[in-house]
Image (tube, rainbow, N blue to C red; front, side):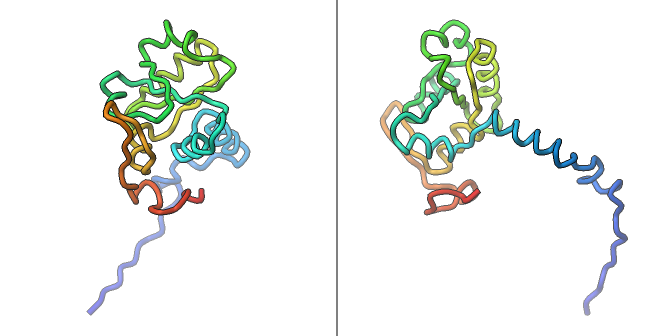
Length: 166
């Protein structure tokens, strides 16, 4: 025996998703365009670095030395956030955009580093996902012991594909 449940349709005002209506398309386009000016994803950063030559930006790891030693993006510059005010201008060129990262989505260290750099006059993007997603997507990284990689996590990137197609 099967039963059929009927649900009364919810009004847009009562539905949690639409309780606040979506922005007008022009407003939303401006927001999403701005978001892309502030962020880069792990796959795009990896592809630019793998293409060889000058990618047009530098990657900055804003974590502690202990974190850096556990693993970091190959070729990244190590500059903990607390040291940015005193060392950034000697380590970085203001004409070259900087892509900051920290541990992962649960950490706002890359955001704090980006703020410190922009206050000094640098152009900055934050790498979404941080080192966590760099490793989870199967990209090679360096540790104090040498190079390493992990198997691609199928919840973060397609296994065996060059990119996610997005």
